[in-house]
Image (cartoon, rainbow, N blue to C red; front, top):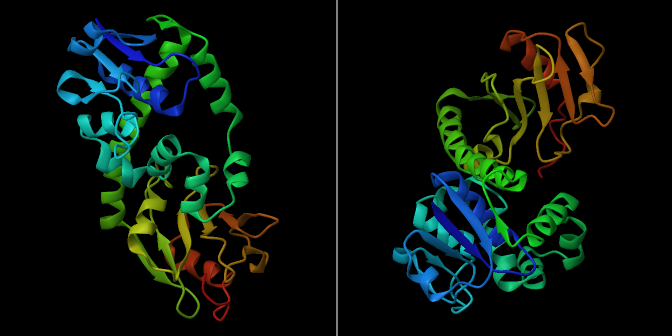
Length: 282
């Protein structure tokens, strides 16, 4: 049996996610929210996270508060487990989470070039509830619903890294760009299972501002989904004329769906009609 020790008092994403990932990879472990003892810090079967004033991965101690140059404990743990570089690429929130924990919301907002009120307005009530629930326990044992939720969350994070990496490679080899109006292009992927998985990472990797639309199998219905990317002003699916192959166009014009997976040579002309060639870049 392994022990995971995190700090008492208010819980944060840092200690919560660190414990969740460890619960998912250790054969059996229980969580204790208290100050660590000298024995905890010396015991290789005890992981001390975000508390203890020591960063020593060889002894499973992952605190950052004693050194302002260190990232948050979750990053320290992910580095130790070998997931850090992939997580930086896969999860858009991952890097900023450490900045929020280490430097606070005001410095993070300044770094992002936004008002700090935007960060507070975007905070999730789900985050608040779960962290509050975690704050109220002193120990979390196997069989507790919160223990199971955290273990499942940690498993999901690790699995998502692997599945997005695999999907990214498939997009590199299987997707294609098709021309639309003017210089604009659409990214076409025929991958039907979870078709949007890793799409945002691939688009970021491409760095092609002229890709203004994706065409993928729909997850709601048997047809194609045509989606405007980046809210680009050149694309408005309300420009599509009434057509027997079009099943749905959103009232705001950002998405359209076909009834069936038409041959590409038929769906691309439909996409072309939704694009204005001289609408300007993003």
